[in-house]
Image (cartoon, rainbow, N blue to C red):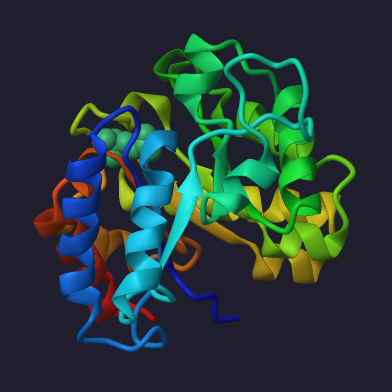
Length: 264
Ligand code: PGA
């Protein structure tokens, strides 16, 4: 089963509009030499205030717009209303997004997001014609207590609850061990692959074998140009969700180039 790899950059709460545009230009200077078929699916997730600036750059340039997709870093499940500080799926689409990251551990940890909220978001994103990138992952305490698989399976079952097979098949999951995020400590590639294969089996069980074969499951947590080749050589790792190394065109482009050496 061949699944097109995804390299997604999560810019988190970084970069002003001018900086976001400059980084976007830096990525386009790499992608312009390739067709969309030669490249992995490239996704970038800027802060909300830079979405329009970046997506309009893409449309104006005539070269990179179909090669770099834009993602929101979060959304609300309601369409509109009295939800101060929130943003809807339709608003993200209007600003040029085709993906939305949901359930990132930083949102679960600092903003008390629950599995139930993440499920509502996934449904709203798919109903709005966008693709959710559903994050999951264990803490160091959970890993040391030997409950990693159980914890992640619970997160995945809850996130996918009530989705059709077709919706599951087009969704994206990112396995991000919390202890590996922003620490410089990547999860061993074989272990990341083992957990991702376990996630794929959970998807097959709650949805269908073909949805499990189609869904793309990424690894995230201190991904760097030097780690990506080994990660992408694993049977079940379909790409990466990159934080720190996505904030510089040089390192993000190198991650894309190294991905192209082993897959695409
Ligand atoms: P990192 O972040 O690459 O800086 O570890 C990954 C993420 O949080 O998505």
